Image 1 (cartoon, helix red, strand yellow):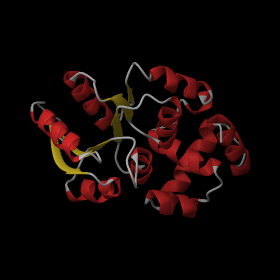
Image 2 (cartoon, rainbow, N blue to C red):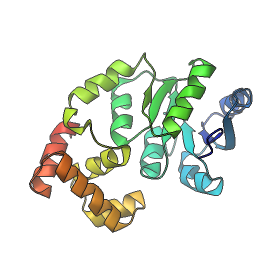
Image 3 (cartoon, rainbow, N blue to C red):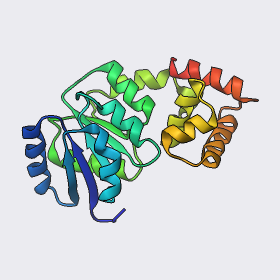
Length: 207
């Protein structure tokens, strides 16, 4: 990622809002919107085509919604959800799926720019007005505090019973890479085998 400019894909199913946000970002130094779309299913392809550093998406959209975008991009690049919805269950689901952040659309432009840079750099950013939802989610997942974003995504799939090949296919990762992530999960959660790991993860994630 360029140290000065963050290359972003912007997704919103409302063309007028999409255009308005694009114009807003033209006034923000260091954030370059390299592509826009109203179709969440195009996130991965557009990100690859334009060498993007981050995806910024609305939450509620027809077809592939914000959660779908997060899942499709998991392990490849960060996704920041920018929406009008202040919803506890949605926040928890997005964070569990590996979202890099969740902000409300009336956020101050300077704060938005800082959040995008932080998320693109690997951080987790949350609007203070919805952070309490994330804390409630985290209280059920204290054991997962040391996991990386990709490990959290893998953890969710392990908890649902997916094997390494299935996880590799879903996340578009090499099977060996998935195996390494699972080994890290076993070590960090002090689980003696995959069955114990899956049960522990399912409990921690509320699955």
